[in-house]
Length: 370
Ligand SMILES: *[C@@H]1O[C@H](CO)[C@@H](O)[C@H](O)[C@H]1NC(C)=O
Ligand SMILES: *[C@@H]1O[C@H](CO)[C@@H](O)[C@H](O)[C@H]1NC(C)=O
Ligand SMILES: *[C@@H]1O[C@H](CO)[C@@H](O)[C@H](O)[C@H]1NC(C)=O
Ligand SMILES: *[C@@H]1O[C@H](CO)[C@@H](O)[C@H](O)[C@H]1NC(C)=O
Ligand SMILES: *[C@@H]1O[C@H](CO)[C@@H](O)[C@H](O)[C@H]1NC(C)=O
Ligand SMILES: *[C@@H]1O[C@H](CO)[C@@H](O)[C@H](O)[C@H]1NC(C)=O
Image (cartoon, rainbow, N blue to C red):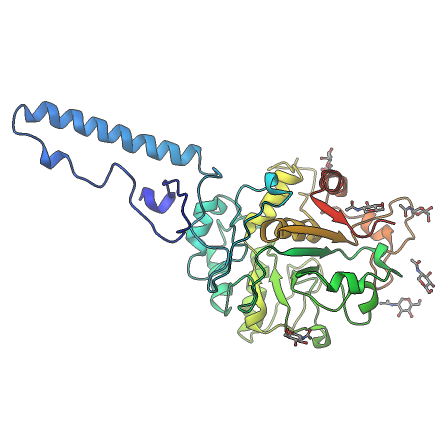
């Protein structure tokens, strides 16, 4: 039972798959006791072993998030890749350096209990929605991180925000030169190649923000669902099984078709969003009754993902001009800053503070710095 809850051995080798028994518990010393004064000795040994056992259980509970514990999965499930040996600048922010960010149908429940995601409901855990996760994941074809032909061990990544600051800039070529390009929601590449480039490695989305026009699909893109409510997983499952979508319960009409193929789709581990919300943006776990709970924007979630899978992270398009409500909100479309200002779901103050902090510490390089 303890083994299922936590993996107590502190491993220093590269073997991430073995599940050795707890040290001190495998030899049954009780039955091998000497014949003289057996009762007393037996009790002492039993007490000693119980103490050792208790110590390990407590150790597990107290240090369940200790960095020395190598997580039970490799970052990449199927393909072998050389690990990056140099330390990223932002390493101090990370609790796990080999975190696999996508849920896999086969072991998502074990992974959830290992990282504590079974203690939170959606949006930051799986507690009451495990069945929704299971159904959606059962329709996906892969939970791999990078393409099987990919062999760059230390990855240079750029996270492309959708900010109006990218308008009329010619960063496209620069952005396309990165190993990994992370984009979000319906920030288009089509028609904006000069401003934002052509390639997309990962695109984070949710049902209300995903493209529905197939011309936006790039077969080389992996599309990552960030689930906030059980309905988001039901939506994915229904689209993948050809069912009809009931649009009730979404805050905006969700896409009614899926432009991505099952092999392109992943489900983000809620641990990533939880880390962003509680550790990096310092959101409270419980908001006052008269306040809507705040959640990280997709941009901050994308940066959190990047920190977990990249060696170097650069940003483009992360800038709001709050002093001009008529300035463009995005590099596409006609929305203005006035729309963002009304937003009750996010705490942009906390996000700006976080962005300022990681920029000042040189954890990221800001490409849209004029
Ligand atoms: C971008 O360029 C177009 C055409 O040159 C211009 O009309 C527009 O005002 C510019 N937008 C920004 C945000 O600078
Ligand atoms: C997808 O990747 C392949 C192989 O790298 C490349 O030849 C192709 O042009 C890419 N397609 C798009 C739409 O970027
Ligand atoms: C924000 O918009 C105002 C008004 O258009 C402009 O004067 C200011 O320079 C802008 N600030 C930034 C940081 O772009
Ligand atoms: C933005 O505004 C222009 C001019 O007013 C209009 O032609 C265009 O259709 C609008 N675009 C969108 C996405 O609403
Ligand atoms: C937003 O975050 C800032 C900085 O952490 C905090 O001071 C403020 O109270 C938060 N506002 C809301 C409405 O949660
Ligand atoms: C990037 O630089 C611009 C211009 O200096 C600044 O307004 C913006 O806040 C910066 N973005 C980040 C994420 O630091």
